[in-house]
Image 1 (cartoon, rainbow, N blue to C red):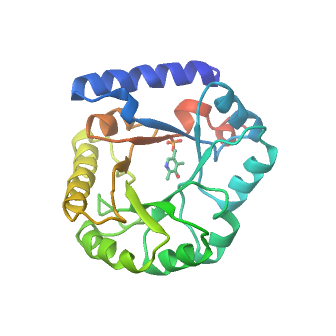
Image 2: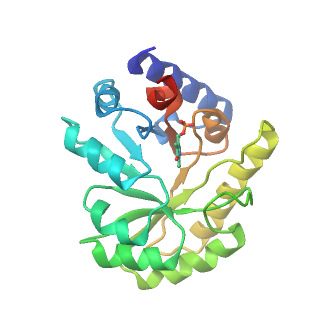
Length: 228
Ligand SMILES: *Cc1c(COP(=O)(O)O)cnc(C)c1O
């Protein structure tokens, strides 16, 4: 299927999930994750009406930016090495992978103005996953106060690798609970209104549990590295 058709299917599923959960579908942004595809395919997503694109690597991001005709809103969704911050900082609107103070310090130093950051949380506790332990998140948010270019826009998580829907759902719920704990602190630099959760296989569950940003690669633009 082409990207426009995939997008229509995904949008319909999001609308249905929102209906079930009593939410407004406008609250959910679709981020097309283009890390597995060519700039041409990424351009198709933009042409189909996608406003937000995500890349998980510095090289992939810069390659897309240099080849695309349009300027989408860029989201950096992958592990970010401190020394790479300077390469991406002027190109991205959101960084979804803030997980340590040394990274916050570098973002703060390199940014010309406030950057929208999401704190990556390892909600499932899987050892292979990046992100902060849920119990360390509140203290981390408080520590970020010293970095005036960091805006805590929200939280991000990746669901555990499992077929068990309830386990996936529980990890998303954990993120939602953490969000409300942060919002209760009423910190000016941490409005924390975004929840970045849900990928190709689990975005419906994520939307039911309050996601405001779904990061969808394979189901939307495909995976050209698998096709070859
Ligand atoms: C690759 C990736 C995605 C998209 O994965 P799909 O399963 O292809 O939708 C989402 N989030 C992150 C952080 C990723 O690295």
